[in-house]
Image: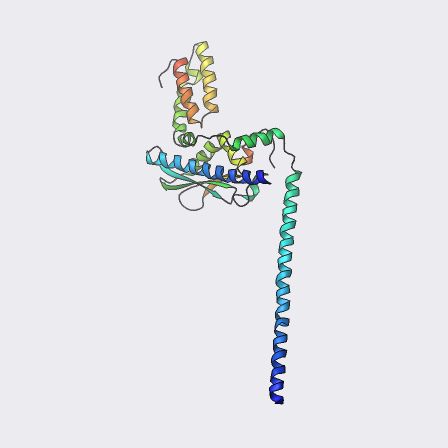
Length: 141
Length: 128
């Protein structure tokens, strides 16, 4: 009888001890969770303050916001990557101001040549300049 | 709060569109035989040294990678980068949409070139 009673007492003690042993572990998890949350909050506050410190010029911000929705011609970008180099070489040799002895033509060639140099990696613009050169300088390219 | 959410979603859409348009144009020029190398654009982590105020976290790199075809020389990699950087409209758009680094990579290995987009935006102001 006493054995049975002792057994019951031992079981209850064991049952009572069980939650006690897991309690520190649980509190440990909550502690680290709180620390992590705190770190995230501090990071966000610091980030927000750093962002607020930057004084944007309104023109700069407007320019950037407008450029978000600007249409960029990707086909032109691809053509510029693949073809603009050859076209630039061709145009720069054909439209070089030194090739034109006539004063008027020389001035026109100078303007066109400057434009060609400025847009040497813009295929679309180079094609337009090619047409202009053919008309204004009376040359065949 | 609400307009911020809308802006965020529209930015995500624009970023997706710009990469998609580039890849479509690259594919078309490769198929038509105009380009000797197939290029592909993708978003990468980017260089933390090139970050600016509008940079997207962990997605600031705009990488153009040669996928197949003729391997590119270093001169050609630089030329591709310069074509993109000379296009002010495109650079501004990339900066506004959160990209900070332009990377151009060859078919093999990790060799490539990279540029800080904020140096080429030319928007009449300084971006931190």
